[in-house]
Amino acid sequence: MTDQPRTQQNTRQLELARRIASETRDLASLEIIESGAFAVLAGARAAIVKSGTSTLQTALCRTPQVIVYAMRGPVAAWLTRQLLTAPWFGAPNLVLGRAAFPEFAFHGEGPWSSILDQLLEVWDEGAPRTTQLAACEEICSRLDGPGATTEMVRWLLSASSPADDSSGPRAADP
Image 1: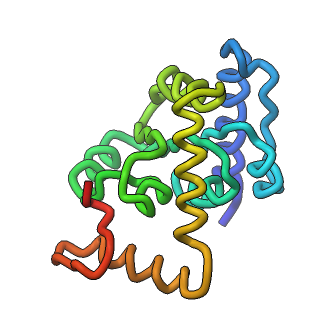
Image 2 (image 1 turned 90 degrees about the horizontal axis):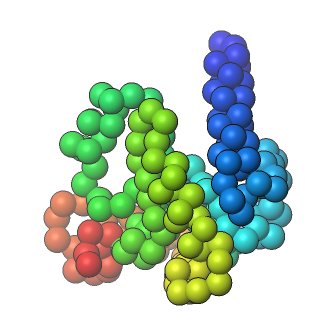
């Protein structure tokens, strides 16, 4: 198996990110970094993050974020809408049981204007940034201490179960 398709995909993503940065008022000097995620995230003012464990890592670095998930096509997008039972797909939102971080799932070019609007809201000082920073602190406290990993696994399993489990929080609870 070759890494060629992955490399082409990464190249397209980097080109798109550079184009978006050059066309956006306050992000013209955006630097795109491909390695050393924790150090970069810890020093970042805000981030656009691909859905996955990186969203939780970003929250643990106490960095405000906008979560994106680009699906491969309209069929994948339709299937996701039909099969997704949780109200959110971003790990930080699942941990908190609420939409503290904006999420965008799309196929095709995507709603980059809306994504950038959300990023600028947490970039500038104000309520959206303060709210996300508080949510990051809450995530850090929930995932700290002895037994945190076991508790997180138990909670995630109960949150994904359709059965009523009153022993802990559920991601679908308001």
